[in-house]
Length: 396
Image (cartoon, rainbow, N blue to C red):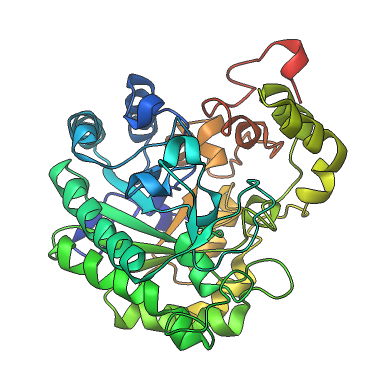
């Protein structure tokens, strides 16, 4: 078990040099929705730091799926910059993945080109956004956009794609009874709530052509009453296995309802508010921040109990994410048969964390889970305050 992290592993057609994955955590390094030199430099640093595969995060499959002006939009104009990124990652010996998704009811009209779309026309306080319900033309178009995104990812040299079906984004909004109130073939019982996901998967698997690995990030629980729970998550996992996923990334939480369920700890809302330019959002965060972004206690391997239930229900490879920030925690996960372990904050704090683990067996990540990096990403780029000390007024 001690050396299991550094064994090669396979996910679909892709061979990784070891069992570590840089999880898809939004970098905020795509001004104008295009990859920047900073994005390339960060992923090169992580690859040189020893990770098996690094994941470029939160790429919208079409304009309607954008929520931020510094978010990646996977379109032809982005391919040259992304090709440069995958080239440097490959040169460092790592594999490159890209997370593709659509933000649904969290889209902002200023960047999305119009009113947000969602399974149902229900107000999203997080935006605040009042989306319109998707019609059949919307559903067909967005599913096709996922397929085109995979084709572009292949052209850009990525070894894998990660379909974002969790965290309360569009596919997750269809899956969750809390956000899907449709009365047609896409709503009601879970089998119908999975229909959009399955149509997306058909497009994605066809576009992958067996040449790139298809991973899917899914919720095991939405993290609040009335959302997806573990029993439905098992059926979602079995369906994804049937529909051609090469691996699942097991997560949980809902950005618009239970954001800290995803990463645990508390959000430094004062930092977040000070970086916002809209005074109404700053005021709302100051008055209601700790209620809207309620903390959840952080523990090592906080998703492992639920992930082991999924492990018993399916046979395809599973990637574990959630609190694996020490050699002991990583060994515990891999000892249970997960193909790989994914992490984000540990690699934001120390991009060479994996290489350092090889040199110090009992090492734990230096990350203190203060979540400053997460507080920044909505208004500026990802950074750890230990590595890039901000002005005193912005420190947590």
